[in-house]
Image (tube, rainbow, N blue to C red):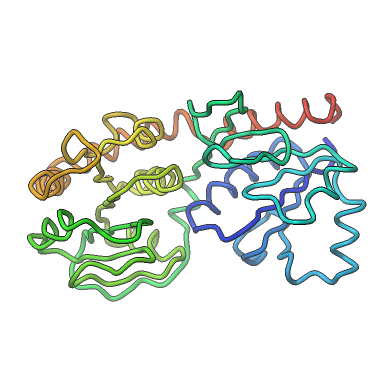
Length: 304
């Protein structure tokens, strides 16, 4: 089909970028000409997908993109101020991970079985091969099987901090809040995949979100089990038996977190295996690309 332009607005995490990359590669395999624009990142991070950083373009080139390029535009994230100019001349699709307060194109959500206003549901894609081939720094940590905590909230709960006091292995942290005591902060890049590939380990999510469920899926493809409170997002992406639940509520106690960590050490490999099979069966690049291609053909009146 004719060229599709993706515009990825705002800052995205490595796990979000890898999901979008897997979806883009699935489209390319089906003959879709795809070019991506973003406010962050470099072409190297996007592999064989054509990518340009919006900030590096000249004013003339930006105007050329807005006025002439692409028969169909697909916006990921919040709309930029100039987005109405694109909508004047071409068809547009707007995707959020969660329900948006304001849609700026055909409304779509990249989350299975979620949405409350008739949004089209897209499926995330996960590519295990690219994770096993990820490049990055292998941080110096003592011992194997690190417990990696990824938190997006303002702070960790006291229950989690107390539960981690009994953890004797390496402890690593990803997030913007203060890390727990005796933990090593990891850079927000592909290093976490290299760490899991070379050392194994565990993923602990204090507060699962849609995007963090994507990281959990990627972890499972590397044989790493996820520990979390019961979560709708993880149920959908990993399966109800694809992660180790801490208690039965969204606010587990210290003892429940400790018990979940102990179960991860004992049976984590089997749980990660269940999650991997669930992810591979439901969220391959081909399945996600089929859903996108159907949407794009509808948006262009069936033109290829």
